[in-house]
Image (tube, rainbow, N blue to C red; front, side, top):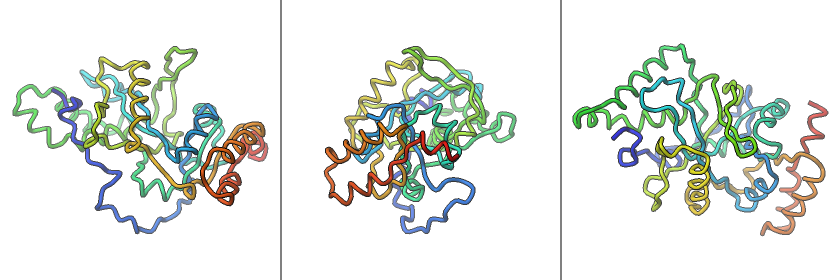
Length: 286
């Protein structure tokens, strides 16, 4: 067994940790946006989020080549990703992730346990130390050695789940084929929500085993998450600060969708509609 075997993974539920102080005062950001944006490439995905009042995690692949591990090249874990980029600098990010987005209050996100990514310099002593620890854990041979490192599983896994190199390769799909593209990840200013699967009655893995890492398995397991509302990232409409669509046609379609599908009062519908921004118009003034 390794630290990535399902039986070994006992990850703390950080999203519902009772020790967190929900009354803690939020100090607004001055150098980053006070919004967590999530983007997608289809209007129907945005409509689904608004209707369900929830963002459903999906399994995404993470390359681990920057760690130079002997037996682990990549993993896939369930997550929902956000960025805290200012509105006037969103265009490059949207080119990669889609022209439809929802911006939720950063204060709400912090209270829900959404965590900023830790970007690591591949030449740093910090990463060297982490590589040494995780390599020793993965190479443990005897039961005694494995027992010694088990106590560190939570820390190692959480570090791994919320860690990314400053730059590297990312998988994306083009015409149903997977390709890799070099990216400066630090530009993405990523925050992550990773659902707590432990304690949930499900066969869904926290980590997809390496021999099942392919787009088909990602989609299959992600479809499984759609049937587990307790693993969704839910919100109330007052947490929404912005809704972004590509053009006026999208805006009209989304307004109609909200009017006919959202089971809320008229004033709540008007308030929700007032948060819609049209990207094609905004970028002219950026």
